[in-house]
Image 1 (cartoon, rainbow, N blue to C red):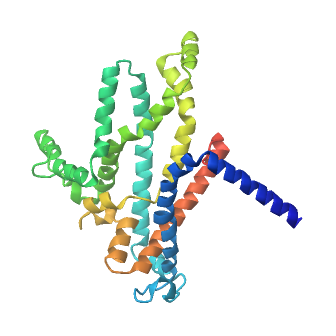
Image 2: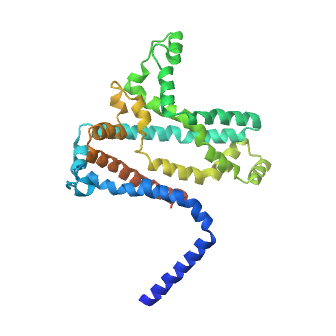
Length: 313
């Protein structure tokens, strides 16, 4: 029994060696990517254990005292836990509801444009905001929404309204954050849908025209089913990062007056964990965030596989 297993393993090893020698260029090409993930994504996972320890710099990760779930309990029992969780989920769900369908709609609209020059112009205009840095984007938002010199408040006053202090009111924070992100990313995110649309067989459209289908009917019955697998896969990936509200943009937009709505897990980790040198506590909060994202990814993937027979695995 053991001899047969050893022979099978040896045979498999020889086959793998032959495949490597035959396609060594491909393996060399992918080696830097694998090395990047090993060094910067997998090796740092060794440090996750400090979430269960009281990390002391002089003792290092391994020799720091073990405290179990102390830091998790402290986070769950903190006064800010439910507010932070509500803000993080609120922004993420809002962003998913507003930001996910708009690139699909934009791609369908661009795909229907018959004048190539106008199509390219629209693509360039919608792609361009993606290349703005977060700092520049937030600077534009602050400038446009300024109560004194901002173009938005100038227009409101011209129409007989009164100034609105957008950046200091918690009720406006989520909308400003989400819709500015939609404006910045919708063109870039539509690229993959445009690529999927280009792969649809033109004969399907010809058959639909022969049957008397209108343009909207062809979009609904040909284009959307054609890109459905792409939509499902991207939805799963987006749902898997539901708790991953970015730090930089929130932090730049945050101030003491809107903190009630802008405090999310990433900013809380920075302020309570990093600035306060509470590395174990910060790691515990970050690990909680990652575990929740992983659970959501698995659940949404399973639901998608059950409903549409399309999934990541």
